[in-house]
Length: 87
Ligand code: SF4
Ligand code: SF4
Image 1 (cartoon, helix red, strand yellow):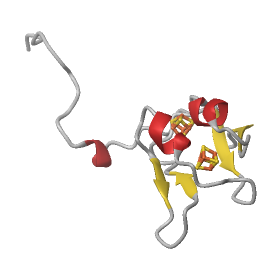
Image 2 (cartoon, rainbow, N blue to C red):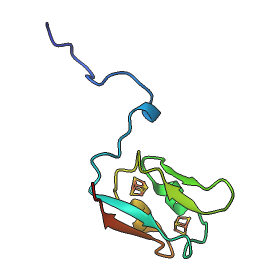
Image 3 (cartoon, helix red, strand yellow):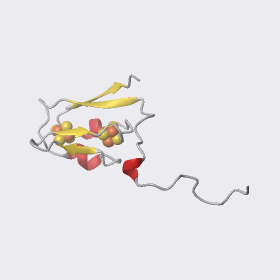
């Protein structure tokens, strides 16, 4: 069968394609330090940081977090620590 030019990825929406499986580090959020500024949600390139429904604290969706560490770098109160992923 001849190869087609173009994308080889199967079609599908991003919620169906979990992208956090190859992460080396994961962010750990300290809710005691968190001020709820929302910077982590703003800078996350995966769009996978979400506020809790009942309080102004944030958590990453680890099914989609790639462990880039941007949220930890940009958090103004150092409430996020990158820790080694354990499989
Ligand atoms: S950037 Fe830091 S302080 Fe701001 S919401 Fe995220 S964890 Fe909380
Ligand atoms: S480590 Fe990167 S991908 Fe994961 S939540 Fe933080 S900014 Fe988003």
